Each structure stands twice: as C-alpha cells, then as structure tokens.
Image 1 (cartoon, helix red, strand yellow):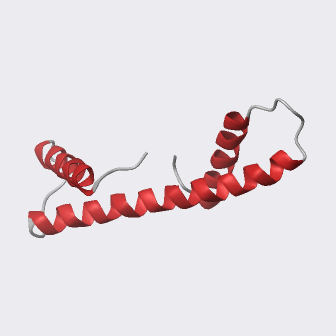
Image 2 (tube, helix red, strand yellow; image 1 turned 90 degrees about the horizontal axis):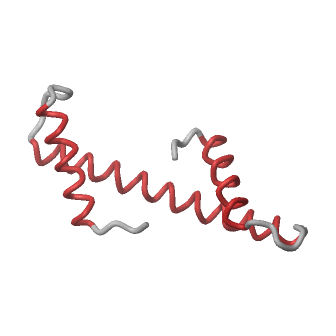
Length: 92
C-alpha cells in the first residue's frame, strides 16, 4: 500500500501526540524536528518493505518456473516475504 506524504505526516503527528499524552516520551528537541524524524523513519521503513516486496517477487518468479500447476502464488509470495524478512531481521 502506498502512503502519501500527507498521510505519513498525519501518522507521525498522531504517534508523537499519543506518546506525549501517555508520558511515553519527553521532547528534548523542537516538536517539529522530532515529528520530522518520525516521518523519515516511516519513509525508510516503507522503502525497506518495497525492496523486500521486489526481492520476493523475483524469487517467486524463479520458483514458479519449476512449480506444479495450480500452486497458490499469493501464499507462496507471503511465505517468501516472511522468510526474507526473518533473514534480514525485519518485522512485518
């Protein structure tokens, strides 16, 4: 799923507000800088997930060449993504 910059900005703002309200964080820098850093982290995580998706699609294509007919491609793709993420230490 693709997120717009506006959606990411709103998500980062909501996360920061919730952390501050619940006492889970104390600002040591200007709120705008902290929110900008949260946005950058979200962008980075989404980019990593897109890379993982591309790698999984390539592996799926390679596996499908020798796979029997009628194999559940979506299930296989999910399994490949899960394994790749586990190998890279990425939570899904």
